[in-house]
Length: 354
Ligand SMILES: Nc1ncnc2c1ncn2[C@@H]1O[C@H](COP(=O)(O)OP(=O)(O)OP(=O)(O)O)[C@@H](O)[C@H]1O
Ligand SMILES: [Mg+2]
Image 1 (tube, rainbow, N blue to C red):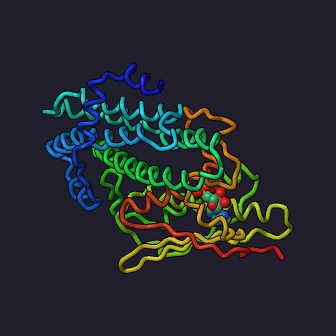
Image 2: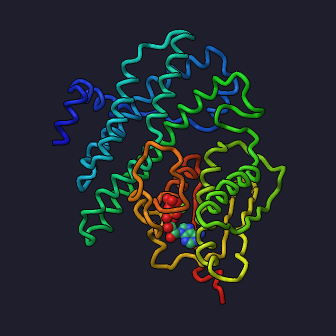
């Protein structure tokens, strides 16, 4: 029935086109290239960038749309997943219907169009979470581990691709800023201070903790304030925010009913010769060994799922302390996007109250 729906709202020709484009090879773009290219946002360069995206984005979007159609265990038929697939098909159609970009005027129109695509896809992550939730509800718990594994691999690929598409669109749009902040090339900050980003992200996480629990542990940040390196601040912000949120929750849950002062969460920024490492540590009791293999699963959370209560995904203030089970796996994908990684080391019982 759902397959029928696909042809009702999207023409057969469009679906065939999606499959044709989905077979084309996509082109990777490195951080260095984006930084070098974006440092000269001349009219000519913006036009070249738009022409590249006009070919590249439909390939990437088509691939995801195809994948969304053929997910295992009936996930593709879940209403939330169908909605996400429709967003991908709508965006593919918008891109393919757009005429060739030949001059500045076309380029500006194109930029407006891809900006709209980015907004259309804003809620893909919670919407997919809802879809997976819908699948999980009626699933035999015996086959759940295998299902989880397959879906996990798909979601890892899917979100990695989404990060890439959003980075490409965001970068192109940001290059139009007539007065960019100093040392910024689009989304990239050529002298990003990890200390500063960590401070902002932890303040944001702490505010949510305060809102949810009425109090929040302190956060201490250690590192060299002058150290900078080129990176995308929004990505680092997201990662630190998610990790600190987890730490605050663990410490808060452990200490809120005790008369002891909650130990602070510590963030250490280490600037090595080859790597920048950021460690977030807490004394919230760690994670039991039995739970460890699952913490990177998109289906695993020890918090109550906020999707059950209010599935109004149209609103953008859906930030909660925990509950989706997405914080760690998504953050790891962001870390990996530019060649990094995210690891969790647990010391069960650390932060014991006795
Ligand atoms: N610092 C920590 N201390 C103790 N447990 C943790 C810590 N970090 C993560 N966990 C455990 O790992 C689980 C998964 O974390 P994750 O951030 O992926 O999802 P979540 O916090 O439950 O939900 P959200 O998607 O809203 O972040 C948590 O529910 C929690 O049980
Ligand atoms: Mg979390």
